[in-house]
Image 1 (cartoon, one colour):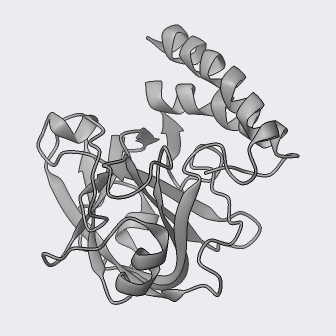
Image 2 (cartoon, rainbow, N blue to C red):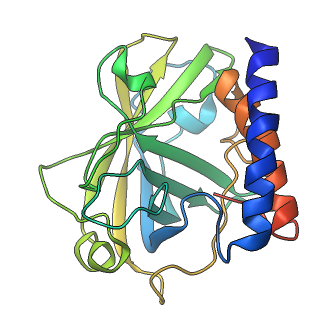
Length: 230
């Protein structure tokens, strides 16, 4: 499985590198909206040896909500929720995609139209407590268009519950809240994320998805002059 994931990532890196050189902007998730945000960690989780999860804190963040393939609305697309937390010399980047919410469907990417949807890391994180996965689900039912312009207007004020699950099929445990704020100036400034190189403290991106992403991200960075990619 490890070798297959790396080989698949290297195969994907070839077209992504070409696309990054030829396509202005981002080769992946090209259309999105960037918002100011806050991440509030409650610390109300079991002591799994990961202080980042158990230590209560409120941090300013930058969020990008995006359409994965850049398909025009109202077509469904695989939506992305990227979160950046400034943390000294190295930021913390979280990349979540629209998925199902069940024990098995949490691993399945699901195209959506509405940005107020369930998102999961799909990728696992190695930790002192074993493999962990992260998710975000909207706190209240709402319809937020995923097209960048309307999204930037309608998303401020939306809140997501942040969840963590232990093991492949563990129960989701709330550990915080993501509060979306106002757009960060222009609708989609050039903010890049890298979940493999910038995981939360105490977590290491691991598993087939991380091994797939690493060469694909590297090719996209090289194609765009060394800048991290979403």
